[in-house]
Image 1: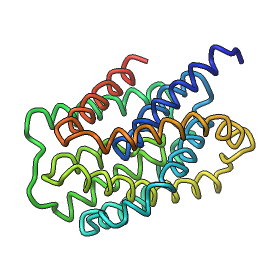
Image 2 (image 1 turned 180 degrees about the horizontal axis):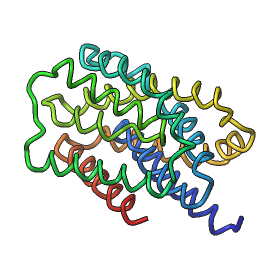
Image 3 (image 1 turned 180 degrees about the vertical axis):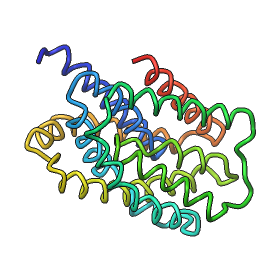
Length: 240
């Protein structure tokens, strides 16, 4: 593989790491569709989960103290049931079609938020469980479980710090389950480990920079960043 491909992939990984450090989510949304254009999709999905877990390991301890567990637990419990189901279907769907379907879902969720139809004042258990189940399925399917959870949390009245903590804890738990599902299915190969090791430095550098920037921005900028990110990813996933 040419040096150009590696430089592009390292740039993508660094941007994804910055996004994760800044917002507590989003790296999988960037990595999965972008790197799938350069590497085998199954290899990419497994590598993305490892990178996400590495990122979460350094953020979980701080996030646990700010997590709103009454909101997160129903999401996690429903998600972990569906992660293995998504992993099972990973090998059955054509990657391009899968990316476009997810892109359409992301775009639909963002448009719903922008019209103001997605706000709530109290999280309902049944709805939260459905959101968690969808996120778990997408995590197992493509390592992209973020949109349902992010849009559900961002439509609340929570401060940015609480949303960020909820994201970090939720993804840490569900990605652990996904890693186990991939291991059982035989997807955790030596090639995955090698790709992970090559990407870790760029991802870690972006992650640290994102964490520093988060401490210096207000909530309005945070929400604009999230909406802009999701819109961009949705369009790229649809046209790629």
